[in-house]
Length: 173
Image: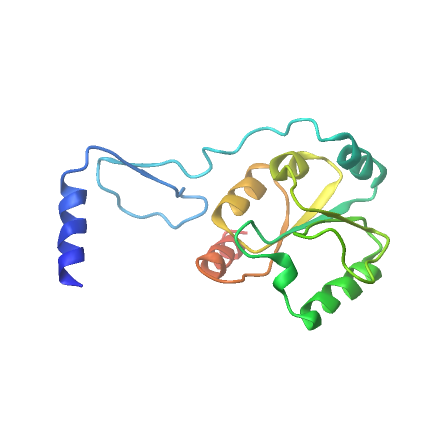
């Protein structure tokens, strides 16, 4: 309540420097205190070479590939069977190779064009020229990385700040 608000205001008044994970490209322009520096996207970097299996998979995808990741907080395998089936049927129909960050080893009835991985070097994937679209939950870091690597996104928000992040991304084109 009020006590927390007062403590927070006190902290801001006594702060020498505030580094804020925002940027005018991903957030609207807004007035900031003189000691505030926007550093959104500071973690973004050029792509590094991919592990051989991923590199081979993407090199073979000369007409394009899809990357699907819903971040690291929510377990992909916890999605409902109905939603999972929508994804599987969609992937089966598109015929493009798909790399899907999935937290278990297998999915029953997985289409042959889908490669599952528990962990993926996201920025290195986004930097590969054959990766054509990133299906994302819309987490801020993922959006910043997609922007940095100029990768189109399809957003499927799952919670927290994701819907507003994706709405801003859509508004900004």
